[in-house]
Amino acid sequence: MARKRREEITSWYQKPEPEVCPLCGRIIPEDQRDEHHLVPKSRGGRKTQALHRICHRQIHALFSEAELEKSYATVEALLEHEEMRRFVAWVVKKPPGFYDGTKRSNRRQQGSPKRGFR
Image (cartoon, rainbow, N blue to C red; front, side):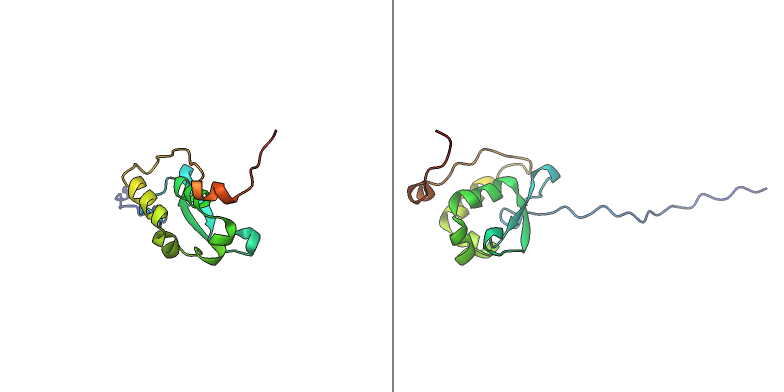
């Protein structure tokens, strides 16, 4: 019996394209991927956008849910805000897996009630 020639085997599996954060433009590692509701879920939002965890945390550190709903419900609107642009300019220089703790904006601290245990 004759041997069959080895033909090149093509796989049906195609590795998915890496996701890119629409804010900073860096590839999102799987362990740093967060889903952001463009309009907060508590305000009826359903549409989500995949973001870096650090970018997602920065959005919520800067803006209240009311601000997100009324003024910053798109990636383009977020990028128009001066503090968000400065953050993106800083984080774009970091490697994709970079994460650092996020501090609440001074602007948000003034108007929001203090929470926590006493």
